[in-house]
Image (tube, rainbow, N blue to C red):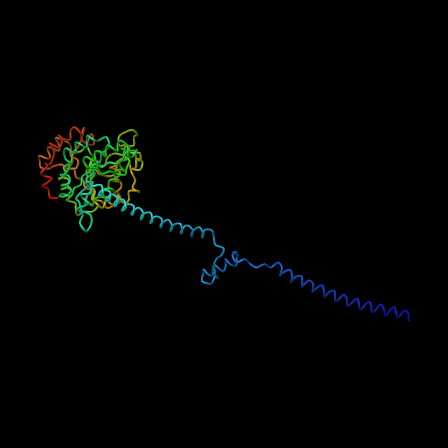
Length: 410
């Protein structure tokens, strides 16, 4: 009885023990699941709306491609990216170039408008010519003659005024009846408003025959002055020809007008005494060319161009210089620069030796033979030697005569 009781007690304990183990195992599993559920709810945070994730980038690309990104290469090659960047840079550069050209054109038009307004308000000789404008546009002139001069050349200017350049009412008559504008061309000193500028202002107030440029005077700056002259002249006067003359040569205005009138119907006209001198590489000599190496081998000659004492160009060429003046290269010598600007253009070079006659007896003999010279000077001096003293003598012996100018049909 005793053994049986013990046996029976052990069985009950074993059964209870088995039941308790099963429940314990189940409770552990339930606790583990509850823990996972609780942990996920606690640590899973909402995704911020402004955060850019790879999935969102992919969505954006899909939208840009029309909703399909099956053929899109996400991992693009660096060369492809650089190529697209170069194309974009090229497009931007072209847009910038177009914008700059537009700005330059507007600046030119604004400058011309300001010059016109200022001259009309100041009552200068330019205002008189601008008042005679037809309803269709600016008045047309045959030619504008710009006489290149310097601050130190007062005596030269006076000798020109006393001989071949009409003064006062006669100059105004020349503009109105013959369509010929004549002005001394000069810029300003290194110190604007200084004593040199004031002297020119006083002289201009007396004679009214200057064209002032936005240019700093200097012998080594003649190429820049030439560009500035053509740009200013084109903006102020609508002429068929624009002429540049030095202040130490003699000119027969009627003969010059008649010579140019023969080429009125042409475009791209470049008239002068054409030459092709040597390119001087030696330092210290007159007309030294610092950029001699650009003209080929040592000892080469320049391309054909008009000598600088007097030359004339048609309106289209003067306009070309005006528009492109900021990019046209300047060589040391002004006449070489002008010839270089026309290389590559469809320009007719007209070599007329009457534009470079010698002083008496050369021009005198030709005048007596009925072949009147357009211009006379001494080659040895690149102008009339001691022109301030000798201009009257050259005029007396080689002039076309005053009546010829006023009777000329130009």
